[in-house]
Length: 423
Image 1 (spheres, one colour):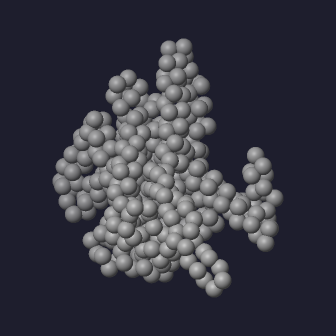
Image 2: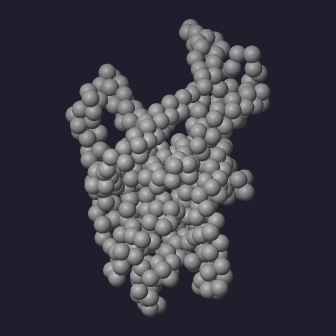
Image 3: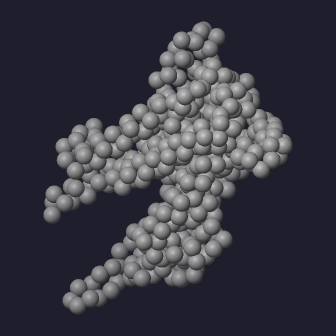
C-alpha cells in the first residue's frame, strides 16, 4: 500500500501512470464505436459458435464482438512480430543486426514489423468482413464500401499499435500486453453480472470449479513467473592502483519462464491466421476459399485436436522466444569480460554450454506449464461439458503475468528514485 501511494507522490511517475491510464481509456472508447449495418443477434450467435473468434475478441478487448473500428486489436502487429522473429532464424545477418547494433538495430527491427503490419491488417480486415458477409451478419457491400471499411479497420489496428508503443515508452509495462489486459479486465463486470443473473442452486458446482481453477492458475503463474535457477558466479580478484576489486561470489538468476505470456499470444495469433487467410483467398478463388474455410472450421471445432495444436504451439513458441531473447554465448562473454566465472567450469564455450543446458531444462518446465494452463479450460470443458471455462485459463494467465510485469517495472522505478534521493 505504501508503494502504491508513493506512485502518486512522485510527480514524474504519477504523470506516467495517468498517461498510460488515459491511453487505455482511449482504446476502450474506440472499442465501443461500431461499424454500421450489423445484425447484433446474428453476430452474437456467430461468436457463440466459434471459439477461435472468442479468443480474438479477447485480444481486441470486446472490440470484435461489436465490430468496432479497432476490431482487429493488436493481432496484426503481433503476427508481424512473429514473422520478423522467424526471419531472424532464416537470415543470420538480420539476427546479428538486431543484437549487435543495440537500440538502432531494434528500432530497425520494429520499423520493418510496422511495415508488415499494414498488409496483414488489410488482409485480416478483408477476410473478416468477407466471413461475416457470408454468414449474414452484415449485408453484402459494394467495392467502395468494402474498401472504406478495410481502410478504417486497418487504421484502427495501426492506431492501437501506436498506442501500445507509446505505453511501452513510459516503462509501465509492455504496451501490447497492457492493451490485451485492458480488454480482458473490461469484460469482467459484464461476465460477473451475467453469472449472477443466471445463478441457480444447480450451478453451485460450476462456480466452485471456476473459483478453484482460478486460484490454481493464479498461484501457478505467480510461482512459475517468480521461479528462477540461481547459478553461482565468482569474480576473480583484480588489483587496480592501490585498491583490490572482485573476489566476491554472487549468482546468475535464470528464470524458469523467460518468455512470460508472449508464447500464449503468439500461439493464438497463429491459430487465428488460417481462418482469415481462408477468407482473404476468396479474391483469387471462391471455391478454394470455401474448401479451406470448411477444413479449418472442422479442424478447430474439434476441441481435442484444437487443444493439441494449441498446446504444441505454446511449447514451441516458449522455446522459440527464449532462444531469440536469451543468448548463452553473450552471457558467457559478458561474464568473462567482467572477470566472472562459474566455479568448476572453464570460461568461454564451456560456460556457454552449461548455461544453455540449464536454460533448456528450466524452459522445458516453463513451456509445459504454460501449455497445460492454456488448454486446462478446454480439458475441463471436454470432461465436464461446461462451457464457462472456455477462456478462463488463458485470460487469467495473461492478466496475472501482465500485473506481475507492471508491478516489477513500477517497483524498479521507485527504487531508482530512492537512490536518486540518497545521491
